[in-house]
Image (cartoon, rainbow, N blue to C red; front, side, top):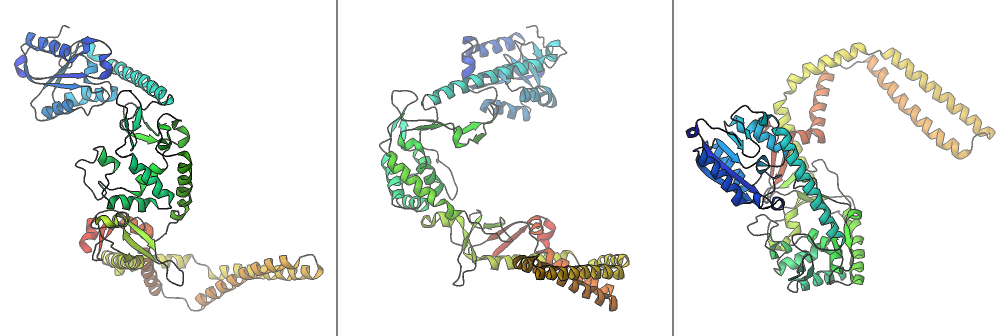
Length: 525
């Protein structure tokens, strides 16, 4: 350690200390006390002024969202700190990408000098130690990756042995008071679990079970374990059909340990991906069951029998664009067919639908057809105001004139007449084959109807071409017709509607609020 600082009075120093659980295995030399002692000795020796000491105890080096690290970054942003000192580079971080970002870009841009004592790194001077810094960062990252693999292997081994390694046991269980990685029945809420299965066994739907529990004010699993503290939103603190369905299909309640349903993308990310059921780690008979296996299987049959009833979806022009104005959630679509039987769709607030008796929102019921017609009328009005038909007519007229010059009615008429004659000859031949017995009656009827339909279509087209040849439509009239068709058909295009409209909100008093994606259209509307 041969670092020299020629102008100590120019610096306001941040001493940064980090210690994770993995670092503790390397011995006492990595302790917070040891790091602080080493850093303080250095600043006293060089007569540096310490602005503050930042300590993240128990935080991994792969995570840069550490409380005191972010507090230090805040002080750098406000120019209270212009020098950062750590014991070694791994204290700053073990993710070589993020470590390189701070070393090579962030600190230089903020005019912050970084010093790593044991590595001999000092960004304030030219040194060969600085040149190999990226390689040190990679080695620290590889260390973190190796530790992650070892931890994952240990956890996987515990899962296969049926030991619980999660944070909170499934609702209805709690951690064993003395034995590690073991769960026992939570007698306080176990009756609620048994009751849920009993209600399901009577044929009650998941939605009805959730509504019953909400009416009785029974705390949800998240509320019971304290996860809902301070949480806001229309669903906060309420049972949902999804939660009930998940519980009814969880084998934990028949004494099996079910783990490994999600897996982290990598040791650098907190995001988890759901695993297919065949990749779950299931170990049988690891704890006391709350539900007997026979009841569990009967409930599975009842739950699975209702899945097909929810599989139907309805297609309509504004699908995915309709939201409740009051709660902000997408609207549900219900079919209320009349006596005649055709579909008649209604929009209903999804929050109200799920939590009717909780009084979170109101019904908002309104016909899909009414909403669609109102939205199309407004979009048509906006398009006509934004695109003046008079300005479009010259463009359409040029296109019509160009197409007319390229048209050759006489050649097309002759071509179509030739096709008609060919089809007529084929019909005559088929009739003769039928008479001689070469063609079966059923085959003759099938082919005859198809060929006759093709010939009729060509004959109608031939009549149109001959009429145009005798009395052609004026360019102006044709252009006007095309402009009107464009304005009318474009406004009923789903692609156009999705491109123009961000969302349509329905209010409690049945008002329709259209939010366009472009401010210019908002001004017109």
